[in-house]
Structures are given as structure tokens and as C-alpha cells.
Amino acid sequence: MIDFAVVTLSRAQFALTALYHFLFVPLTLGLSMNLVIMESVYVMTGREIWKAMTRFWGVLFGINFAMGVATGITMEFQFGTNWAFYSHYVGDIFGAPLALEGAMAFFLESTMVGLFFFGWNRLSRVAHLIVTACVALGSSLSALWILIANAWMQFPVGAGFNDLTMRMELLSFKTVFFNPVAQAKFVHTVAAGYVVGSVFVLAVSAWYLLQRRNVEIARRSMAVAASFGLACALSVVVLGDESGYVAGENQKMKVAAIEAEWHTQKPPAKFTLFGIPDLKAHVTHDEIDIPWVLGLIATRSTDKPVLGIYDLVAGNRLRIESGIEAYAALRELRANPSDPALRARFAAHQRDLGYGYLLLRYIADPAAATPREIDAAAWSTVPNVLVLFWSFRVMVAIGFFLIALFATAFYLASRHVLAQKRWFLRVAFWSLPLPWIAAELGWIVAEYGRQPWAIDGVLPTFLGASPVPATEVWLSLTGFVLFYSALAVVDVFLLTRTIRRGPDGLGYWPPQPETPREPAAAAADAVR
Amino acid sequence: MQGREQALWRRRLRRELAGLIALKLVALALLWWLFFSPAHRTVVDADAAGRRLGVPQAAARTEAAPAGPAAPAAPGVTP
Image (cartoon, rainbow over all chains, first blue to last red; front, side):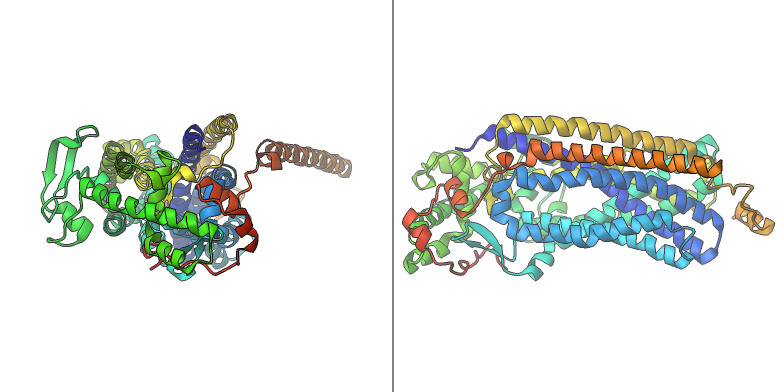
């Protein structure tokens, strides 16, 4: 019998560790690219101040990188400990990108991080820049493999079910790699990470300018963050639109839930800017709508409908009925695997087997399900509309605010008046938490919106959990909360201590007396 | 004098490193014992998955079942 308390606890544990981990990942992605830009300027111009900038932001990158690694490792362990059935059922596909992430990206990234910190006086300028670029490449490659694995959970392609091994098996790695959801998710997530890193540089630099400390470095850092951040923030919108279109093609229920679209509208569908979804009455109160926008985003046409929740539930009801046939055929096939007639019957309904599994939440034998249980299972395919609706809107609002922030910073930086606009510096500083909030909300939209599926249409989440005692999950969950909270405190402490010391306190800039510089070069740096 | 100080420093460094590594090993062993030892491991194979999903394989057939190819992929799953 499935213990749903254990399922809930296991889900809570994974969600919590993922949310913690995702505090560090986007900053690692974003800071590494900012480092590449700063060091490229150093290599091209030879100006020492750009090297000092790279070294200073590199220290902050290093602290964050270490925390990201520490919080990421435990997530992979959980697949074996808390999600043993999930690992068996889809490990043949899911394991490959995870292993590649470890073997390729992580080793590349970790090795190059070491060279980045200890190679300043041992490598040539160009060689060190290549190392820094490899750190950024490794970070992005890590994200690529993880997102390929994650995208397969959202849109499972390139795999088939084997009734003898009772699991999904890889048929085409190429198809898994080029999964359209993976491509859209990768570019969207990585660009969002670049925005996080840019806001971090912008906010910390704004603080220095408000303090009138490290002005030379802060001004240049803000200019880099503003230009790179603006390009990335605009890309996030474009790539987010692509993600929305891909989801509109492959995860229609998620899109309907995000939009609280209870009934199919006449195309092109309107976009609800504001509203209060009522989960009991299945209506949205106090709607403020923008005509056409949802239809254009989700279908890129004016005549294709965006299916509403009621229509999608009706379609899922039919798939559950087909899934019951698949389940019954599978049961007989398991007893008599060489019967070709049974195999043909199973093959006819196999694509809906996952929908048949949904009934195991309500009844031990799905073949004996009543219409009431089928109806309950069909409605269980609707994720939490209220959470998705508002998570998405807050994420998008923050995204547009950040575009305005970067655009303003870019304008002021190009006019060389950044340091004088103290109101803007305050806004930039207090904007620091916003990209993290947006990134976490984006994760909630993607993963909470996938429910009730662990693998969309293939494996319900509740069937993936390990049958471990609830007390054990409580124990590990408590341990994780305490350990991760301690890590977060240490991370914030180390980052704030390093920021407070600053490039001047760390001895990076201005140059120390024992490192004599050409007077002309120093003067040139001061005015640039 | 300087050589003697350096030797002392090295000895202390070695002692601290050895202590840290020992502490790390103890922490790892504790983690393994608490969460990953065989007593905590859920072994899942085809039979266990079948039982979980309510589609156990008949005992006689389990032994005779040929290791056939994967069933045709589901239309919704394969491209």
C-alpha cells in the first residue's frame, strides 16, 4: 500500500533542497559570464583595474560556487533514497544526462575553478582568460544536462516502455538531447541565471557608490552588468515566450492552469493580467484581460484555440479509460508475456498506461474503477491553479521591472552620471533579491505545474516514492533544513564580509605600494 | 632557528590535516550508516515495480520469461 504521508514528505524534501540549490545556481551562471566579460576587457586593454575587478568578483563567485556544489550533491542522492521506484522506472533515460553532467560539465567546471584562483601568476593572460571562459562554459554545460533530464520529465521523448523490466528504456539519445522542451528550457534558464548574476553585480556596485568606496571598480562593474544584464533580460522575455509556446504544444494543462483558463475561449484567447482564481467554483474573479495575447503566445496564431481546463479534463478522462485497458492488458501480459494477441492489445493502449496508473491513488485495481473514481482521477491532472497563476505573474512582473532597471542603468552609465544618481543607486541596491524571487517562482511554475506527474503522462509522482518509514524522511528532512539553513547563513556571512572588505580591503585595488606601476598607466586607469 | 620553526609549523599542519580528514571520514561514515546502508536501501527490480503497480509477474512465468526486446514505444512517448 502506498503511504501518502511519505510521498508528501519526500516531495517536500526534494522541493526544499531544489529551492535551496537554485539560490546558488543562477548566481554561479551569471557571475561566471560577468567574469569572462571583465577579464576579456583586461586581456584586450591590459588595464590592471579590469584584472582587479575579475579577481574581486571571482572571490564572490568562488564562495557561491562552493555552496552550490554542497547543496547539489544531496539532490542526486535523493533519487536513490526517496525515489527508488522513480529511479527504476525512468533511470535508464534520466540517469544518462545526470551522469554526463557529473562526468563532463562538473569536472570541467571544478578543475577550471581551481586554475582560475591559483593560475593568476602561473598562466599567461590569454590562457587565464580561456580558463575563465571554461568555468563559464562548464557552468552552462552543467545546466544543459540537468535541464535535458528535467525536460524529459516535462515531455518524455525518445523512450519506450518494456513490460519485462517494468521500466521506460532509452530508444534514442539524440531525441532526448534535442527535445524541444530541453532546448527552450536551457536557453531560458541560463539567460535568467545571467540576469541574476548581473543584478548581483549591479546591486553590490550600487552599494559601493552609495558608500563612495571603490568608485572606479563599481562604475565599471555597473556598466558591464547593465549592458550584459539588459541583453540577457530581454533574451529571457523572448526565450520565455518560446518556452510558453513549447508548453502550449506539449503541456496544455500547465498552460491552462497558469492562465486559469477554465473553459476554452474563442480564438485568439485573451490573457488574464489580473484575477483571483476560485478553485472551488472554477471561475476567476475580478479579471483584467488583454485580448489576443494568450492565443498569440501559446499558439502563435489567431485561429487556433488554447484548450481550457474543462476540455482538457474531458480529454484526460478518455485517456484514463484507455489507460484502464492498458493496465488490464499489462497485467495479463505480465502473466503471459509471449501471447501476441495480448501484446497487440497492450500496444494499442500503451500510450495511456500512465493515465491508468492515476487510479491507483483511489483504488487498488484500476480495472475495477467506477465512473466517480475515473472522474476524480481526471480532475487530479489539474495542478494548483492559484499557485501557478500568481507565481507566473509575479515572475513576469519582476522580469519587466528588471528590464527597466538595466535599461536605466545602461542609459545612466552611457551618460557617465551613474554615481550622481543616488536615487537610482538605492533602487538598484534594494532590487537585489528580486531576480532570485523570479527564478524560484519560475521553478515553481515549471515543476509544480507538472503535477500530478513525475514524468508527464507516464508516471504519477505518488508512484515514484520509496516505501521508507515516514520517521526516516522526517529525520533527513529536518537534517537538511538545519544543514542547509546553516549553509545559507555561512554563505550570506562570507559574501557580506567579502563585500564589506571590498576590492580595497582585499588589496586588489588600488594597487598596493609593493607592486609598483607605471605612473602613466595609473593615471590612465584613474581617468578611464 | 627558522628551520626549527618551519618544521614545527609543518608538523602542526600535518596534525590538523590528519584530524580534519579523520573528522570528514567519521561524518561520511555516519551519513552512510544513517541513510545509505543496506538497511535503508530500497531495492527495486522488475518484480518489485510490478508489485508496486499491482501487476506482479506470475511465478512460473518469471523463470521462463524470455528477455525479449522492449515493447513498441508508446505513440505519445516516442517521436
